[in-house]
Amino acid sequence: MKLPNRYWLMGAALFGGISVNVAQAQTDYGEGDTIGAANNLSAEGVQAASKLVKTGKTYSLGIVTGPDTPAWGTRWYKMGIFDLGPYGNNKLTGHDDLLMTYLGIGSQIDGLGHIGVDGVFYGGHTSADIKTQAGLTKLGTENIPPIVTRGVLLDMAKHFGQSVLKEGTVFNNKEIKAAAEAQGIVIKRGDVVLFHTGWLSIMEDDPERFKTVGPGLGVEGAQYLADLGVVAVGADSPSVEVVPAENGSMAFPVHAVLIPKNGVYILENMNTGPLAADDAHEFMFVLGQPKFEGSVQAVINPIAIR
Image (cartoon, rainbow, N blue to C red; front, side):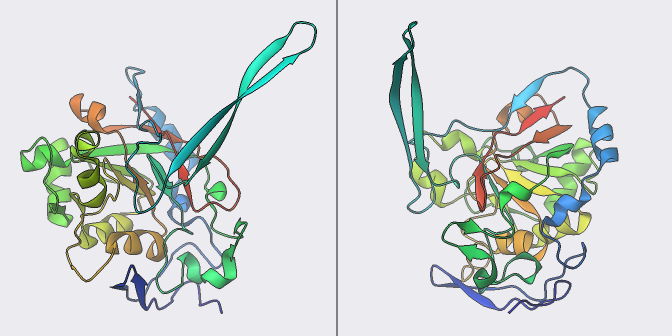
């Protein structure tokens, strides 16, 4: 059963035995839409973002993904290398590789088919409608258009006067507005908003703590950003949202607000430190995600250019 696209009721879902309640969800992009807030991208936005490039300096926002990368739950990564050749009279040799991994590991984008509530996903699509053992038939990350737009970094560590925010530190409308005002930033429709919390700096020294708790965005702040029309929200942490959640009975409520309710993508484990060190608060953001058919997530390496 498919619920109406523009107004559908999301009930209670169980994520790991924890109840998540999300009230009436609404989209603004028309019946049958499958790309959500990516509709807010535009050629004009690309041109405006290009004008932010003053120095030509580039920043890799992705981290290296490997077998020791802290990952949520039971996710894992395994790489195999095989010999090729020799071929031909010139004895050409080489290597081939085989990667077996979860796509939701390291720096990643959460697509619209990743999170739903009670089996209902963005646009009212149910799991029964779109899921097969071979992948999603709708909402796969291969359908996300190139995300080339203005990127905004909000330095929440600086806002709170800390180098690394403590786990459980939450920021919502008040903190987001204050940090943006202090940086002279106005968040606009079509932006990608990244938060710097310093949390990525503990990944190697304390991987278990890094992946299980953290500072982050709250529910009110998530809805505020969605209402502004941002395309994606990211941070230098595995969850982007605060963990434990503001309401201890809920599991990943910010994910539930951003993805199924508003079609906003989530960018996890973004390497924001170099941007924060350079006080680079706005830049051209470029992402062309891999096009794995039917995938719900993807390992990514977005680029910031200023």
